Structures are given as C-alpha cells and as structure tokens.
Amino acid sequence: PDKKWIMFDGPVDAIWIENMNTVLDDNKKLCLVSGEIIQLSAQMTMMFEVEDLAVASPATVSRCGMVYMEPTALGPEPLLQSWVQSLPSCVQGSTDLMLNMFNSLVPDLIAFLRKQLHETVTTVDHCLIMGLFRIMDAFIAPFVRNELQEPLTEEELDNLSRMMPAWFLFALTWSVGATCDKPGRQR
Image 1 (cartoon, rainbow, N blue to C red):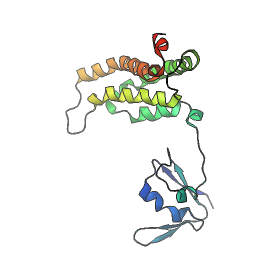
Image 2 (image 1 turned 45 degrees about the vertical axis):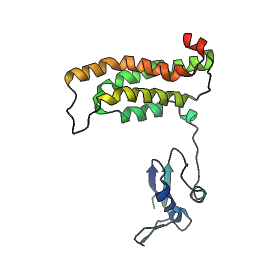
Image 3 (image 1 turned 180 degrees about the horizontal axis):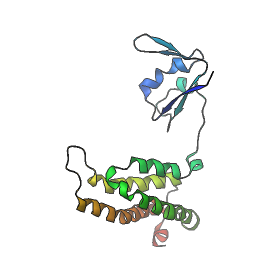
Image 4 (image 1 turned 180 degrees about the vertical axis):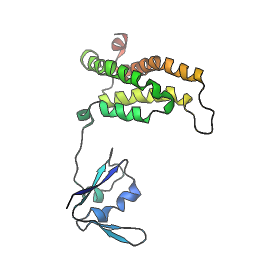
C-alpha cells in the first residue's frame, strides 16, 4: 500500500494541538469532540511544518520527531517568495521590479554590512530582511482597498508603481543599514 501524508502547515494553536496527542501516540487514534474515534492506518503519517513550538506542550513535542531548520540554512529566497505571494493585488504589477531590486541589492548590502561595517546590535540576516518587508508593507498599506471601498484610480496605481523603487531603497536603508554604528551609516 502507498504511504499517505497528512500535512499541517502553519502556526500551532494550543487548543487543537493538544487534541492531537492521541493521534500522535503509537495507537494513532484521533478522538473527535463528538466522541467518534478515527483510526489512522499504519501507512498514514502526520507532518507539521511550523515556525515555532511556543504554545505546544512538552507532551505534544515528545510525541513528534523534529527537524529544525536554522533560518540561515534556507537563505533569503523563501522569505522573499512568501512576502511576494502575500502582497496585495494593487502592487502585483511591481513584483518583478521588487524581485530584481531585492536580488541585485540585498545580498551585496548584507555582505557589505557583515564584512565592512560594525553593528551596534548584532542581527541575523533574516531579521534584517523581515524588517525590510515590514517597512515596505507600511508604505503599501494606504493603497490597499477592501471590497467595500472604491478601487484605486489609474492615477493612484501609477503613483504607487512610481514610488515603489524609492520606498524599497528607503526600506532597505532603514532595515539593513539601521543596525550599524555612526561611521558605518556615513559609509
């Protein structure tokens, strides 16, 4: 028989993860609130892809095998792809530009920061990159419309796409460059 995988991808919730303890045991029985019990077959495996285990109890963690991926092992590409996919539709026309700017500027700037500058507070690359994305999100937020609001005008869309490169450079400066000391900022 073929192996079957049940994948859970997302944050762990303290309530539902505790209800998974019985299915994670060797007997593989999922006990539902209704009292019904679902038996998983020997060919079925459950896998959880989570950011952290902050709300999972030791009882739950001890029932699982763990593979920990250090954020530096993945590099910036998964962060970039995840952020681009989460962008609102109003900036979808600018994603290629932002991808090009990111790929041409961010790796070199982080390498320059690590080799040539001194940070007042030590950082890790993925935190700098996430800071860049959060600043960009703040610039984009005023242009996001819900279904109850009027859509952006052509002029607003033009302004948005025209401002994206400047916003990106500003966000890059204040995310990657913000951690270095005064002489480093002048460089």
